[in-house]
Length: 451
Image 1 (cartoon, rainbow, N blue to C red):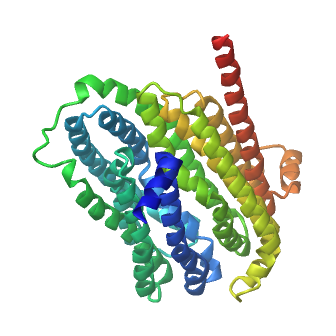
Image 2 (spheres, rainbow, N blue to C red):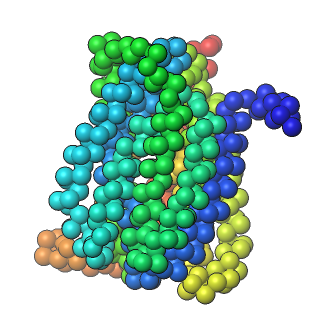
């Protein structure tokens, strides 16, 4: 059996072999996650609070925004040092970022305590113990990348796969115990258990990389300037993407009727199926592309192939949802109210697949120290969310803008789930067109250089 796996790995190559491992592991975990998202949550969370689940999960992302920016710098230079065999710098970098992440987490805690009451008011939720649990989840989620990221950067994909697989059953057990007492608090407690486990397990795996026998080698004098410049570039990408995702989830919860915000939660659970293969690939794309860049190699073919695979899988899932969506929603009473939203689910599945490919393109560019894509992605993101916010909250402009213009904004009736999803789908199509044009121009440029 081991010989069969060895031959298969040799035939596929490291990238596709590890992509297969991550995909299989993640999909086994998704069986549990599907049970949580499609049965456990709708069972315990009332419909009037169901639409608040997604905004709650976005809190940790906003809370850990400074850390999310640092993660890519961390992974990039860990990968570079490991490729060059500089384990002393690897150890020093891990130690330094542990301190940075803890400091940023403490700062984020103070800011979150100040802003949390306004957040709960916006999503129409009573805080209680929920605020404390969200903070704990956010702190752990913010710190965990400093431990789990080296497993990707150092290409410890066997351990990375196993750890991520075990998080799903752990999360389920915690939720089964806690959610009957208070649904949303129990849900967030389950979310907090994932980074807590990742931190402990990663420390165990990384013992040999930070072993006392390895002498830490200072890196800041030589590479500090590069790290700062790299982090500034990543800030525009990660910062905008995180904030836009949080604002969109808030708009859906705040501006749409409760039944439609609940419907968005339900259909998004199924629509995200189309991104599963692409997400498995994206976990490996950055470290492999960064390694190729460090060696002076071109990984564009790798990105093109992975994008085509992700697109094909996503469109196949969208077709499956179009055919089977109605029978699936009719299977269980808690799902039946969302039968009218099957078409929205299909459109959302396509949009999420296209957004994933655009996100992988950004990660590929960052791995190659290229940030020109920000000139397109930042304006597009702000235009998209600005349109969604203004045209769903047109009443704010009464007395500010001409009455005829406000009446026109109202006549568009953007404040429906279908229109909101269309306002996501159109920018995703524009984003894919931009990616195609960028690669086409590079292909033409390469052909000119060769001739």
